[in-house]
Image 1 (cartoon, rainbow, N blue to C red):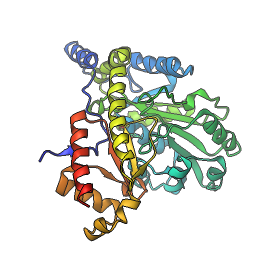
Image 2: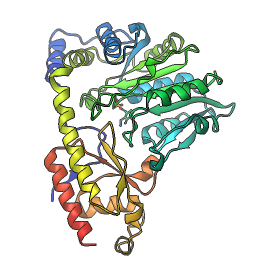
Image 3: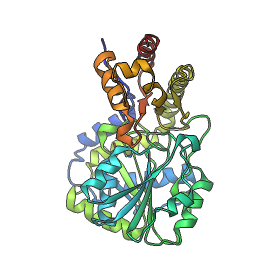
Image 4: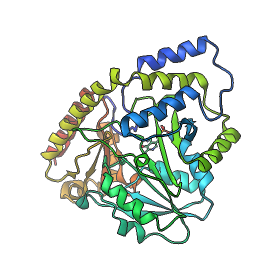
Length: 368
Ligand code: PMP
């Protein structure tokens, strides 16, 4: 039986042609020496321009740092703005990458619990209730991984207004899925808001929007003082990102209209297939995602059915392990996202893989 991997954070799309060609050309031109620490000027400019085009946000390329993937962007920012023992507020369910990085840096995570019944809302009251004098950062991902939830302009505004009374609490928005949106939705970038206290930080990258996870290109947009420290951190740790790789990044941003719309259409089709199937499962509930390529499904009811209990499948972790061993279907258990009882299903897979998955799941559930 073929393995069906719906657990990955990476879409199955190939890298854009223009990226591959530009990188090959750069290698042939011997762009193989150290480059500028903060990144290729052409790429920093292209990133600033993208935020102007997509969000009408005026950003100086000087405030952009190109990093080796978004994880390294996060690691860099956390390293320069946080000290061991500091507290950060992190909405849950949350991507496990954040919590792992905080563990590494001995930073204390305060989870802000959000629930599907409230459409994973974060209210300023909930947020304020978690602030102590040790709180140094509020981080959120927009759209959310694993929920696909888009936080709206009024919502973000309400957090920012409240956080103005806490100047020591910086704000970080992870916008790595910002272009993967459905049904005319659009995300609101943190860069669209004024930043009088110079404490708004943003990360993004090429892994998700453009299917370029192996290239390791990400970036930070931050106020001058913070960015200076990040550049120093980058100089000390990795001396900058490979210049020929960044040339591929420039070509990607220039060629977006040639490949992005058809990918979104394919994802939208898969989302519909999966939602239609889930709608027919009385024991599984979910919130339809407006963005990204995951469905975070609630299995709590299913896990309480007699048949699953008889098989010992009483938790989402056990359920996912069983699916992997017996049905060769890989999914991420909710335990990894601080949400036991849920599973994260990636629908950025070939349509046939998704259909085969749903077929195997239907047979399994009908046998119950
Ligand atoms: N942030 C979020 C919310 C993610 O989901 C991921 C990847 N799963 C990353 C950051 C890391 O991305 P990159 O491949 O650019 O390091």
